[in-house]
Length: 157
Image 1 (cartoon, rainbow, N blue to C red):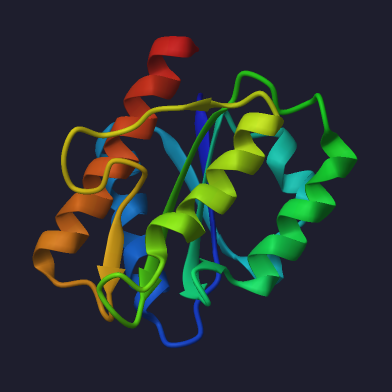
Image 2: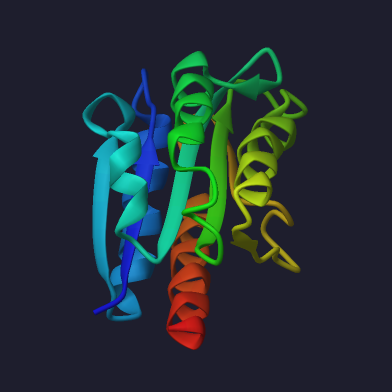
C-alpha cells in the first residue's frame, strides 16, 4: 500500500494542528500515513514513503532551524528520493509574515532531490498557510493538501 509521511515542527501547536488536518486528508483517500514531529524523525524515514509532506512554523520568513537542519541532513539520501511526491505547509504570526518563503525553502529542497511537486489553484498555491492557529477554513485547506498529495501518489504508483 502506498504511504505518505508527514513531518512537522511545532512549538505552539499551530503547525501541529495543520499536520493533523493534512493527515486527515491523506487518510480520506485511503492511503497509509505516518505523522511525526521533526525531533522524532530520521532522514532514513524519507526512503520508505511514496509522498513526503513537511510543515514548519515561519521564523524570519524562513522554515524553522530544526526543519532546515533536517533538510540539510537529507543530503545523505541524495538521488534516492527522486520521483516521490512532496508538499509543504507553514504557520506564521502575521499575514505577510513569510510563510510562502518558508514553504518554498522546503519545496526547493524537494525539487533538488528530484521530487514531484503539485501546486494548487486555490487555498495557497505553494501550500497551506495559517496565521496563528488554523481556523476551520485553514484546516479544510490543509486536509485538501493531504488529499491532493494522496491522489497524486495513487496516480503515480
